[in-house]
Image 1 (cartoon, each protein chain N blue to C red):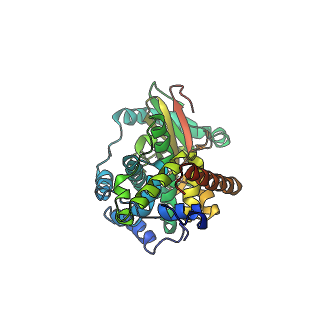
Image 2 (cartoon, one colour; image 1 turned 180 degrees about the vertical axis):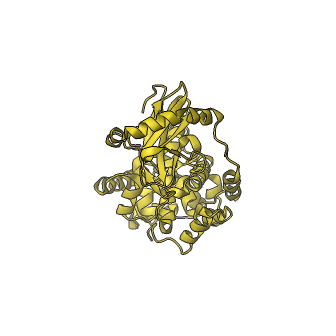
Image 3 (cartoon, chains in turn orange, cyan; image 1 turned 90 degrees about the horizontal axis):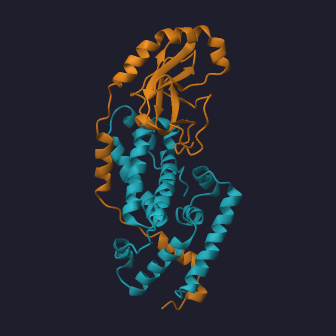
Length: 170
Length: 185
């Protein structure tokens, strides 16, 4: 069956075999396009909206304590049983968005709000679980959270961080 | 042929997509589906799981397009996402104890339609490939089938070049042994 087997490098034959075209379902393209065209939730979560309104005095206080924040710009402090506050100190930023597993990494869904002292904040309700996230500054610059563990399994090649809710493993 | 040598137009397509032209993404999907699909099928060993991983990679890439720092290297960036999806899908499939089965559609394709021996050889290759450890299979496919440089594979997988060379070497040795044991060579 394989008369030339001893004269031919087995691996090369394997490679030739594996390089043969593989037929992929022609409907895959349509499935991808349908999936990405699905509308996403654009309205902010009402709970988060109410929470951020209540937070403005605290954000002002945070600006007064800017030096402390700059020294340790940590984030995701629990402010309710299921709402997390994300904070970034970025005095030069014109806009900051929070992106992560919880919002499909969509910069339009969770814009952060500026307070005094270059403090940007937003509140996101999170169910128990492990989430990767990052900050998108000025729409182009990706920043990990300097006060949170770095995500080691990032698959997009940009820095990101990890937050764990509910005591599950990191 | 390296993955950074993308065809002209990727950057322009990415620019159009970022400007709101969702339809431009269809061109990128069409451009990369076959090559990435081949990798996914060989890496995962199951057509349905492979297509699921491929679809997931395309969708994730679209939704994270703002994180593609160099649109000229969209293909390489997309490859990295697919490699990760294949790892996740492969691990899940392993947990389900799914056995590698011959991909009848592929084996009945034009490349194999002429000879029972070719079908049997393809089947043997598939089974030998499936017996490799995932990290060996991944390195072997990226190096020898997808023809990437070790530096590119290192960038995609996060593994060091020395480790990758060792994985490829082991994969080659094991493939030869498996195929000889199966008496197909």
